[in-house]
Image 1: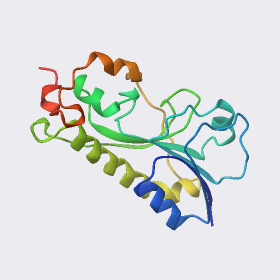
Image 2: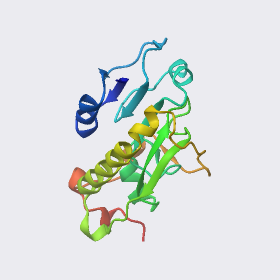
Image 3: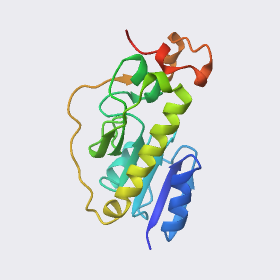
Image 4: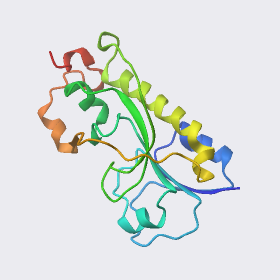
Length: 184
């Protein structure tokens, strides 16, 4: 059975890993600078801390991040929000962790079509979350076996920090209709 380190939030991915792994370690806080070399796979999902370069190197090809944007667009914070504000492709990506934030090679990415008239920020976030979780489930075994694809991200894309959101007015918070954010 596999030894997996999970970095992030509770939910479907954590439940899946509890059922599928032999040894599961869960970490919500910042990692120590020097990694132990005991994991077959490192999974990051909703993890709010930077992964140290030493970890990225030690687990190259064995550490992945689930990201709710169609990379290379909307790297960084609040990717769902920025896909609506900037009018970029809606989608999700599973990518290898690298020292450069959300710039690792892609395992896979898919577009997630959405009608702005039918979604709020919350409902679009939930749809993207389910989609990236399903994408991870699909690639879990190939990742463990070292057989998952690895393709470089192409293009400059975009990057947003947490404080960039301060310039956006969200009158209903996460229940704001995305149609009010979409570029004309």
